[in-house]
Length: 96
Length: 94
Image (cartoon, rainbow over all chains, first blue to last red; front, side):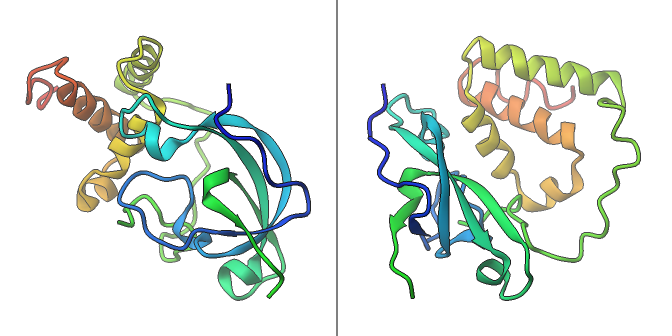
């Protein structure tokens, strides 16, 4: 059973966390602190950040496909990058 | 801490060589390492996230010098030692 309910919907603006965690994580450095758009929720999974520590209490969270513009990630380019990101990597964002 | 595996967007590594991608293994030991990893996951000796963490926390100079399945073997050895399945050093010369 999921420990959280899905809170983001397709089209929602989100921002990823910006810090550098001491443990394993599934958010690559190049996408930290970046603004993206939720494409769709993809399903629930145990949070890798906790599960990677050998703990059995990892929260089961929704994973979202999130789309980022190349300009947001790299400062240039016209393509887009879609990443699968756990819910706790994301917070609701307002348009800058 | 940022880890040595996390190089998305970094330039200077050259073109990715995909010329021999049709062949999954380049030596018998690679296939055995692959099978061993699957077996240990199924037996719940470790989970996939622990396995990824063990690869990422290799010393950077070792990580960069190692091939794909050498990294897998390093992670298996690290986790088996950490969990007390094997004596430390037991697979150092495998």
